[in-house]
Image 1 (cartoon, helix red, strand yellow):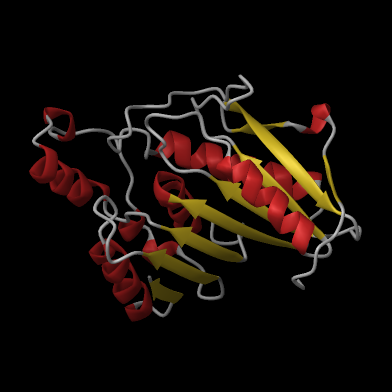
Image 2 (image 1 turned 90 degrees about the horizontal axis):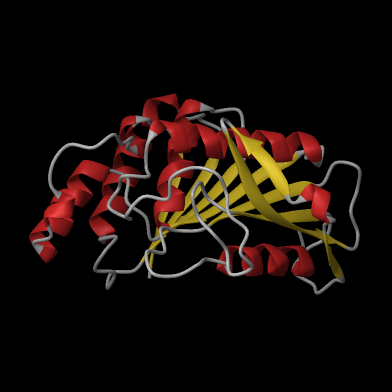
Length: 233
């Protein structure tokens, strides 16, 4: 992919939904002007966004398609979320306490990516994901190792139970206590492909997704022969 500006067009409305497991999920797709029969698919997944209706993943997908050749950029709205245009994906949004980071939503994201890959006949799939969206996408890597070719995870956590403990210690909020249904990427590492290239990005000043989570994930992944590298900001 080359970083030059190109005309980009949005997809037709009938292309704006994809089935992810039991859920119908909203998407917004952007197609670079020069597209082959088998383009590179870039799927962008937003974070937990507890107080807003997310659309930054759409903007990022559009930017990727506009600045690269032969790319389809797709912003994927996670289960239970509503975007600023009022479109809502099926499923449960949760309370941004790790309660949405479970097997059902992981499989929904995997199913949606697989559906988009088939729809666009993509030769490669790249996933760029943030926060809780990156946790789900990282789970997908371990459970569906042949689905994704490269991944970028930004400001995320890879051990949900330890993160909940950290948040309770920081906030004292009882919502972070107790057992919930969840799934952690740190437990899925051995299932990851040895070929996929994964980049983690985290800020040393992030008070929610502490950099220690990314450092631990990188260390364990490298120990198991995975191609994971960490960029510290």
